[in-house]
Amino acid sequence: MAHRWTNDLTHDDVTPKSAYMNRRQIVAGMAGLGLATIAPKAQAAAETLDPTPFDVITQYNNFYEFGTRKEDPARYAGSLTTKPWSIKIDGMVDNPGDYALSDILSKMTIEERIYRFRCVEAWSMVVPWNGFELKDLLDLAGVQSGAKYVAFETLYRPEEMPGQRQPFLEWPYVEGLRLDEANHPLTLMATGIYGKPMPNQNGAPIRLVVPWKYGFKSIKSIVRITLTDKEPPTSWNKSIPSEYGFYSNVNPKVDHPRWSQASERPIGGGFFAKRIPTLMFNGYEKEVAGLYEGMDLRKNY
Image (tube, rainbow, N blue to C red):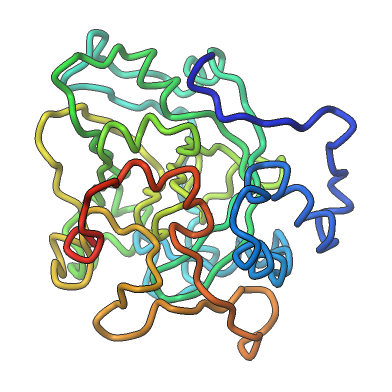
């Protein structure tokens, strides 16, 4: 398909699961999946990252539907029922309706992508996601010519998601992308990690992954996707607009009002792990900078 992200790996390049914990093999995998194209200084910074173990990825999370502490999602997400699951796709599409996840997956090619993943609190992980390009799902729904944005909505089920019983955010959680961002081949609908089904605490059964943006843009446990011609509201922007903009691109030159974004702490190496420089667009500058040509990225934060 013409939109596919170029990947020059072959079957001989597949890394065995037992080797994921080896830094050199993780970095080699990242290079094969696109990070080899970034500038030498950025590549050197990327190579200082340790691979993030599965148990760390699944035990240190932001998923406020289950609580505000990093350990809350793993502690409470076991109550979430994820089968059966469907996604309502509506708005400016030719084929609106409730799409069963099982039917969606039967039509998609699942790939593994190893992406840097950075949180607005200035910590980062390296995560091997399994999933398919969001564009393929949008093509299935038939996006109409006037659509400019894609809005997303998380499941609202406070009897299973105890964080939703607290009013610190307006529920359900909502997010959005410009249509060109949504159609970018890096934008993934993830259904698993490390070749395993997506754990509840990481956004089961299906979540968005937009690797050049801060993690809160990668909305979890998606139940609705709406195509629209207007910029959709997003949860953190509604809650604290001075701190969280619509775009939320990783930008070391634009600090959060309460802390710097110039460096980050890789999770998995302990609290005192050496901080590393934050990469523009999280290391994906060559791939995505063209989306924002001519924009003031300080104003459009």
